[in-house]
Length: 211
Image 1 (tube, rainbow, N blue to C red):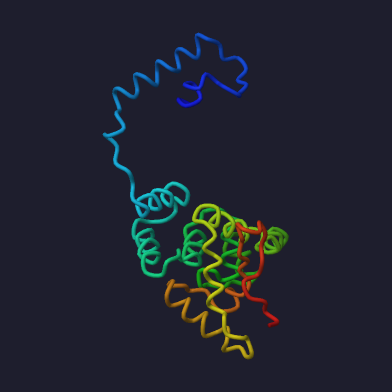
Image 2 (image 1 turned 30 degrees about the horizontal axis):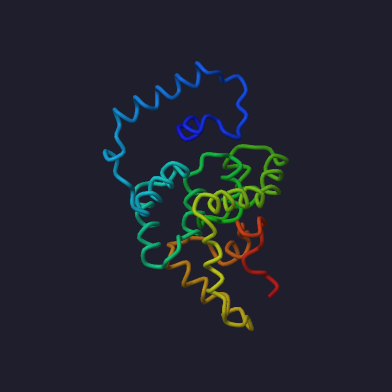
């Protein structure tokens, strides 16, 4: 805003802002800069910036969980996207997200249609609708994380550089990932999580089940 004012709105069209308003805005910034000099502020480190970013945009995360995320990045060079993904579902209070979590077993506990119906005291139709839309909510969380953190989903492609000939070629990397990111989901759940690519702007199943 200060830059726009100093440039006298050059090349811009702001309707309803007259000479008096412009002078008042410029006066405000002049006063603000005197009372809050730039040298009084501390520039955040990349780690501090990401900590702030996580606290602000994924407020479900605890301090310990954020520290784990930052430490993981320091060690691995990318953020633990699956860990963050599961924590969003673990802490959620959104009914639709809870149904998706419980049906898919994202946080380790997998429930049947009937169990979800009884747990949340809802009708069969409401249970069916919630389950049918589970993938939509999973995609929503995956995309949200990609927008906040960046496209670190792509870092996981290196897990599957070995040609997939038998199930162990997928299971072994998954078990390694599960241990590193403290996941409680099972292998079947992992295969159904869609990854959002910021680069391509679309979703894709991380590993195809019929490979």
